[in-house]
Length: 248
Ligand code: PGA
Image 1: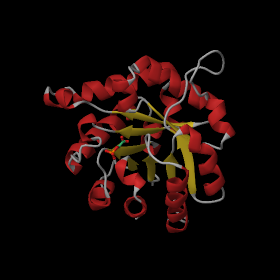
Image 2: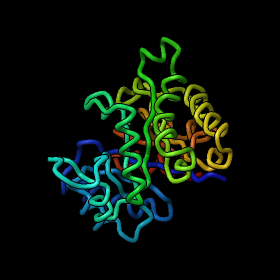
Image 3: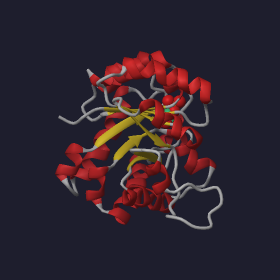
Image 4: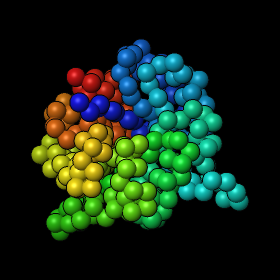
């Protein structure tokens, strides 16, 4: 059986005191459950100090495609490793739409993360206009192909894919379990056509307005292997309930 994995994406939220309270609540409640928190860069040291030795791992929300050099404001994969990161989100829709990250740049970031030994959480997903014009699968396929062409399908054995329909992120509108399952099955099928073993093992998370109240119905879908959780990952009880629903 594939494992289920829930990751919290804190986005640009938090502060030392708030994070300490949140992590202190998560740690005992999630003992024995593998979960991830992706925190803003300045709080990686805090996550490392608070979470070392627990079943919760931590990661970042972005990474430079460059290894080192004169790239003001950027953070390299090896720097993330210095703070014990296991995961890094690449290609989140906010990075793609607000910061102009192209499929090619996302593929470079994915490669840089894997080269350093980090597990990328590769986000894919269509906008509302794309869904309404019937190109959801084409968009997701294009986003996946950019990475598969650059890194090879086998690289997905050391990655997580997160399907996040852009219209469901932070909007309170979740994809229905049928809508989500259909795209997850499409993703797995596309990868299975290239490598059945990789497809079978690949963790494909769903993201977009997942909450305690809708987690269970999503997590029981056969191709949904966990979630990437934004807003609800900032509320201890919500995130704990979502992780427990996935672990069932
Ligand atoms: P949301 O965000 O859960 O707040 O919709 C998900 C994400 O952006 O990863």
